[in-house]
Each structure stands twice: as structure tokens, then as C-alpha cells.
Image (cartoon, rainbow, N blue to C red):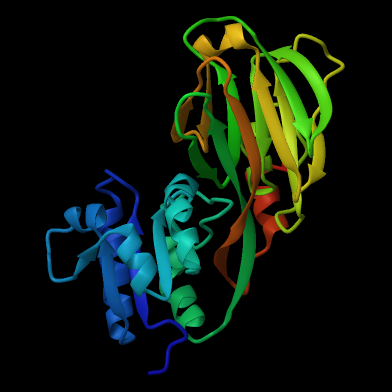
Length: 292
């Protein structure tokens, strides 16, 4: 049987034993189609059977032509930051709750996977951000973010003071609990709870959202996706401020550091069934049109 994808990596939600049955069923389906399978190491530990080869994320990225994520949006976010370096398409199977990124239900998995292997699918590209913390006395630290880069307070309940520049031009100085710099993908995550707009995923844009600003005049702002954003935190504030990417990776700040945020050159390639409709998912997640 001819497949559009022949060597497939499987990645399950980390530390969640409930994914094992779905991964097992998925593996059997793919083997029936004649696909070669590589299990991510932690996912392989969830299975009692050890008859499938295990590999690291990097090995999957180098050797496979499709990765299937079994879990939620958070599982896909974590894997995508590594896999984006290998230009490998990613498909998501959710574990019961509809996700913005993982949109195949286990109940429909066999039908949808067969359709995709037959070439009946859509491919969508999503941008990522790269955050670089430039230190005075040590090499820079950096991380990518699929959803957002957040400069925020921690340890103590007091505001931080920031200055923000866009393409070398001063935007504002602000006292707040922090600042969210988001991709369109992340506009339905933390940025949304901060009052930011929902941005259609294909738009080349970056969203800047203040977190609880001291003045109500500070509003979210959308800038070009090709912008370079520089954030300075007042020197006496670095002891209780840090940078967090996708809510999963923390970068420390010390006095005199600055944060540079820009769009990453690589894009995440998401595979969807033909039936995929972003606005339909949005309506379901936001409960639009429902009557109480």
C-alpha cells in the first residue's frame, strides 16, 4: 500500500499512563498500513510491549517523515520546539478534550489516519518566536516559543518596570505584573486572558499584551511578525523577574540583561484532516452561540 508518510514517530503525553492504549492502537493501525514506527523514549516506557524501536526527539526529527503527537496542546508545544529544526510535519491526536492544535479524536482516529496516509489532508504553517536573554558577563541564554514569551514577576508580589522597543523604536515604559509577547497561535492562550485579541493562525503578526498594568491606558498591540522586540527590565527589578517560554521553560534575568524577541526562521508544519476548521474549533472552545 502506498502511503504519503512511511516512517512515523509517535510521541505520547509525558508521564501519562492513559495514553498507552491510544498509542498501542495507533501503532497497530500504522503497522497494518506498512509504516515503519519509532517511539519516543518516554512514550515507549508507557507500553508493556517493547517490540517497537525507541528514539530521542532529535532522532525522530532526523529519520521520520511524520510525527504523531498523542496528548494535548501542551504535549505538541513541547515536541514542536525541538522538531521544528528538522522541518518534519506534525499531526495531533487528542486525549478526549478538543484542542486548538491536536484535533483528531481517538474515536475517529482510524478513519482520519487512513485518510491522511492516503494523501487526503491539509498542511498549515505556524510561526514560532525566539527569545534571547543577553547577559553582560556571560553567554546569552535562549529558547523558542510556540505560544508566547512572558516577562513576569516572581517570588514577590510587586510590580516590575519595563521598557519596550520595536525595531529600535521606543514603544513604552510601563509598571505592571509583566508582558506577554505572543504568536497568533498563542493569542488563544495566556494572551487572551490578558485581554488580547484572537488572531487567525496564518497572520504574520506578533501580539504584545501587558499583564495587569498600573495604568488602564496600556492596551494590547499587534505588530508585524517580522518585528524585533526588545524588552528592558529596570535594573533594581531583575531580582524578581524572569522569562518563561510556553509556560514550560524559564530563563533567568540578572541586572543589566535585555530580552530580544523575534520570529524564528523555521515554521511548524501542522497536518490536519480535510475536515479541519479553525473557526469551528474556536466556537467550540469559546462556547460561542451556546445558551445557558
